Length: 281
Image (cartoon, rainbow, N blue to C red; front, side):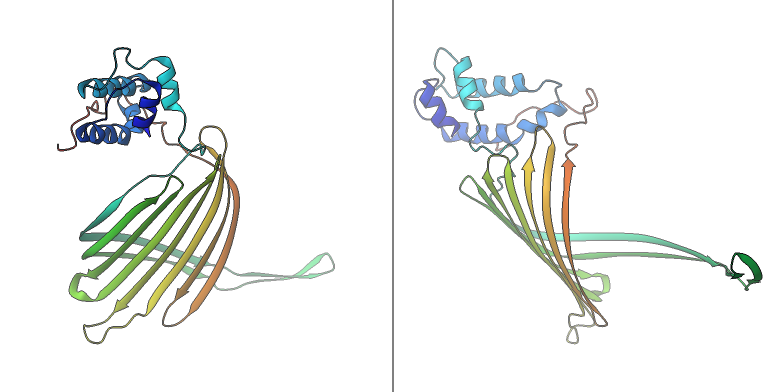
């Protein structure tokens, strides 16, 4: 889209080289992160973009004039806040380390008061249960494999999938997780998200192992974005959980306003300045 608009305004002549397109993709990938290196990052982004086009030998003598810049800044879609346009797949090893602490403290007292009308006639104080404290500690390491897949469908849809299988230390438990999510940029300021997730665990020894606990979650939300980081959201969540001793199902409806805090952090001198590198590096 960027190259097409540059041709429309006459800012470039000829087609971009494959290397230049890769550098453009890298530049847009880190565009939102330039604020970590600069307080006013926009001018640095456009300077990098203009230099990139000049290095490729396609930039005209007039450079990027005001009309061209404003044309490039016009949104491809009318949605004010979009979702990540991730594409491709990944397969590899996965290691999960978990550590937990729990503290339980309890104590009980009982006092019975008897009234006739508004007059107190009897008081009974029962024996109390002394305070008890219980501390537990758990830790474990699981390892296995994961696979994930991401694909955008046109300019308005994005689909993502993830699945993993883990075996705990000592092969005492095998756990499985799968998730599928989709996002739809419906129209100006409107966006829909949906997530399906399934988790299961199977304890026991190999050959005598069966699933004794699984959960299923379905979450969907419809968002309307106000100015900047404010959004109005209506959502629904369906959850099921099955174990060897019980089963429960819950349905939750949400209605609210959210605020995104991203972008508040700015620490000049603390973060190393960002420098764009060729994709091969």
